[in-house]
Each structure stands twice: as C-alpha cells, then as structure tokens.
Length: 249
Image 1 (cartoon, one colour):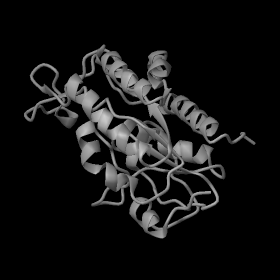
Image 2 (image 1 turned 60 degrees about the vertical axis):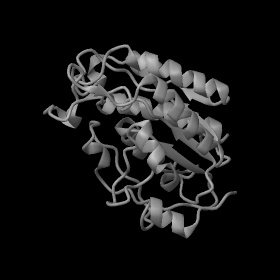
Image 3 (image 1 turned 60 degrees about the horizontal axis):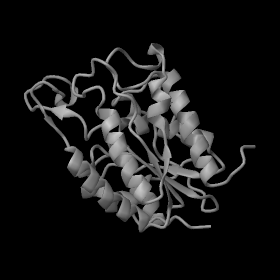
C-alpha cells in the first residue's frame, strides 16, 4: 500500500486527530468550511484526493465519514489558513495543482472544475462572488476550458492515481452569474477530454438535474440542502468505493 508522508500530512491536513468533520445541515460556500478538517491518516489504507469547488467541499466531509476505515479521504487545504481549499476555476487549478498534490502517492483522485469557469462576474456587482451574467465576463471561455483541462489531466495522470471526473452539477433557472445550458455545454467539453484520456465520469449533473426543489438551498442557488448533499455524498462515496474495489461492510 502506498504511504502518505509526514510532510504531506502537515501540508494537506494539519495535525492528526481521530474524528472527521461533521456534515453541515445545508451547503453553502460558508458552511462548507465549518468544523475541523484535520484527519488521522492510516498508512494501510488507500489515499483519495477530492478536488473541486464548494459543491465538492460540501460532500467531502460526509464522504470521508462514509469511507472511514476504507480510505483516507483528503482535500487540499489553503496555504494561508487552516481551511479547505476551494479549487475554483481551471486557471486557479493550473496555478495551484502542484501544491495541492503535494508529495503524496495518491491511489484515487476524484476531481472537478467547471462551475466557476462558466460563471460571469463583474467587479462592481454586489452579488456574492461578483456574479453578473448581464454585464460580467465569463471566467473561462469554452476554448480555454478545454485547453486548461487537457493540461490539468496530463498533470494528474503523472501521479499514477486512478482518476474520476465529476462533471458540473446543475445550473438552475435564476442563477445570477450563470446561464442555464452552459452546464451542459461545458460538461460536453469535459466529456471529450475525459474520453481522450479514458477517464471515468461520475455524472453528478444527471443526478442533480433530477433533484426536487427541496434539495436546493433556494431558487436559483447552485448549493444544496442536507437532502441534496446526502444524495451527492452517496453517489461520490459509491464511485470511490467501487474504484478502490472495497466491499461495503
């Protein structure tokens, strides 16, 4: 079994403790970083890295709980604060991927970029994250998104880990910085990249497209209530479990 080094534990997880973070009742960029993100890493277990935006931050803790005793589930921590890193758009990914990977020998990497890439922002917008699809500029053009993903996938493949792509979750009607349908467009681009590299896709878009209203924080919000997060958690944990070929007790 691959080992995780002490230096990597300090970089990614902080001091080791026994208890994983508790799941927030409702997902949001703020609640997704609450609680302790320290972890006790067992060198006898496979190492799993989750990369992604605030949606993945919402399910990382619960996935860790579900796979306790089966895998070390980790996400990168911010360099300047003991909080989990929001991996943002692919531009942020390119700038930080080496730091996020550290010197850990990863067995599985479950990763995603897209929800930030397709978001329109304007510096004068008062909305959270300066979202503004009327006057703003898209974070990443479709052409750049594909090129960035190619570079990121090539870097991730160098780790030797089994890669799982999680496609972008649903953009609902009324989202202030994102156009309905761009989620489908950007997911199609990502699917081409993953097909070229023979990478499995965890279809979170299909899952969330079928969510009822009570699974979302509110109308036009891309974040999820505890019900929605629980269903995302189940699918992500099942995909990782199947990938590391561990039977559920």
